[in-house]
Image 1 (cartoon, rainbow, N blue to C red):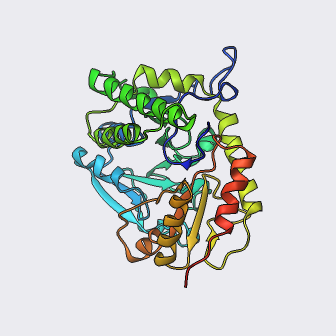
Image 2: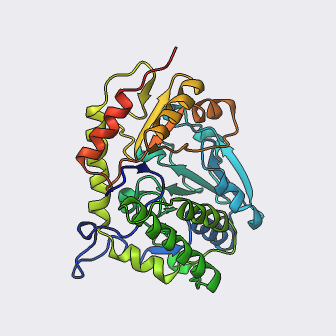
Amino acid sequence: MRVEEYGSDFHLPVAPEWKMDPSEISFFDDAFFQFYASGRAAFFELVKYGRDHLGWTEVYLPSYYCHEVSHFIQALGIEILFYNSNPIALQETDFEAVPDQSKTALVIVSYFGMETAKMKTFKHASVIEDLTHNLLAVKKSKAQFVFGSLRKELPMPLGGFCYSKELTQITAVSSDKSTDALCDRRIEAMQLKGKYLSGEIVDKDKYRSLFVSTEVQLDEAEHIALPKAALEILQSLDVPSILLEKRSNFELICNELKTSEYFSLMGSEQNRAHFGLTLKFLTSEIRNKFATYLIENKIFPAILWPNQRSAKDLFLEERLVFIHVDFRYDQDDIKKMAQIINSYTIDE
């Protein structure tokens, strides 16, 4: 009997309708892609390339960001700086704080699938776009370099990428036994979750502990190359269909949701946050109660991203909830999630 739970890590196997026909060409079958064990590892190799070949001495990151990324590149000895950037005030993004000089690299980000903030023209600084939340936009990007994680939008055990016509100069990184073993354990966790969701097993602790322990290992800097087993999964996926199905689900749940006194939708009609259903709450207290309510109803949300630094960014972090609405879920699932959300009330 199928277990009705929503969110959290992807599972395996992937249903046949989301796999490519062997005669089709993969979205990622492009010479300008380089693949790595994670988005952080991809960024590490990109910054190392810029430091060694382009003269980068400083990297500017958006203030509202996944700060694990900045920690990951500290060993490169490059100066890490921040400019004000927040997804609820994109028009206030402070690109003027970033000097236009050849030693500078600027990272811009697609928050929750929204278009990046409009910026001034940089003639000398290198622009890097993080499209973790919007993989379909990679080949349309006007940035000099693009990078991101593969496992936030796709059912991958691990994986990240860089994309640029200049990246052919980066030395290819060979996989190693420890990263291969890490990948195998994450595949095992995904398969166990698949068995749990299908009702084949009832104990979820084993796959959850595997996910947690391997996530810690993935933070370690030596895990750089993408293992062959992960690449084979990536090349089998019908990526456009998977991502377009999520956008369809996103539109459906937005249409199903009632106007709420507690939250509003991230994004706008003109700039949709289609990475998933991202809700912004009036207060952190309401957000926390709502997140607990979701978990009690088998919807497992995420917080993107924890550990913000400035007061403005912390204010937003404490009020956001992210809910997965990806290809794993059919229309009935999406309508059920909407019904659960619409039924939420605060106990006085």
